[in-house]
Length: 481
Image (tube, rainbow, N blue to C red; front, top):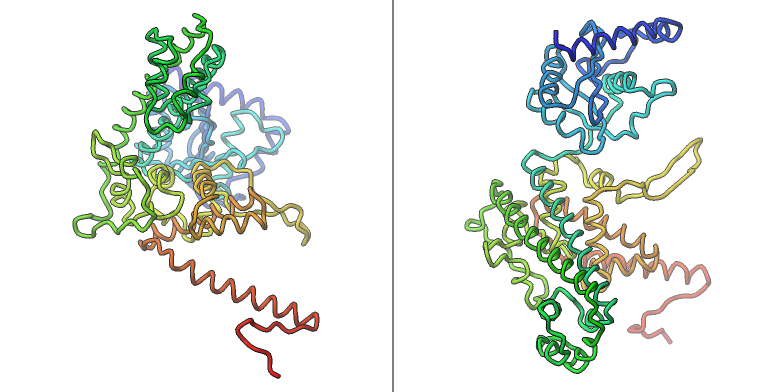
């Protein structure tokens, strides 16, 4: 017997001896036959950074609770012990990133892991230790009270990890852009207030020239790109400052860090493209060509979504992945691949569109007790896919599309936050319907709904006028003499 197993057995004997009193007899009275078992082969794991506590049904082992370290060898022993006990499913909390290694090891051994939210299995008072927590998780899972969290397939999870890492790189890049702004402001160089983007062609050219030793504002102003709206004289005035060495050093450090993270982002994009190219396409563009782009033509948009180095086209690759052109949905052009990494392309996980938007936390919820509504509002759930749909909706404030009209109409009724949620709800339903039913986006359906809404509005006005003793007469008709 290994040292780890001896420690687990000794710890189990101590816990059993400590619970042999009144509390121990109370737990003993709740036998296995009294439980409404739905998952007889269920186990529970309490996740920790250094060790995990694992509980199996009491009749499967002499010591139904064991402690394992988080080393790979110990996780392998844990999975082998669960298989020897006849366990087929295991529930565990989604604690940070510590659940990922046990999750992968259990899948490799054919045990189905069930990742659940910690809020759904809060322990009862008096059982807040790790030893009792894993038993409580095992009991809740065995009686079917735990719902597994959504986790896409392994290859989609790989893309998701890369996309989230890229998001973190972009956030780090923005921090160094702010550092460059701060250094320029401290030197009273106001170029960042004259041009729209310091990281553009003109901004970086001027920053690089300053770091190279150029101090003449006239020479720096000549680096202006012809497309810049500000005049050369305005740029010259903004480049007069006090060139203090400490701020120049800060500017140099921030510029190098920005360049480094830009290179990291490009490498990450190339790796993501390799992962995406490995997926089996749902449609072959040679057999079923990509539908024509029905959006309004925008200058330079194709250059922005095509990698000049690898030839990776966002619209074509997303069409091959999903089988439909999701880029035609207003607001989703730049988020299609990110949505793929978060929800995948198998919509059978959600039988209906209502369940899909509920999982996204884009629909209202309420608490009802005694026939009274105690609370009504949005659930405070952080869902990355739901946030993407909110961002897509928020970008439509000035968009001249039916969805943009819907957002502005809802804004007058519900306010900015409610309008964004309502529009994100509608975009999510369109996304779900297109992927599941394999239909293209049809903007003409909005015209039919607008006509129906106008009819309802006209009927409402007539009804209100009739209640007040009036009669509405259309302008085209002439009243009878």
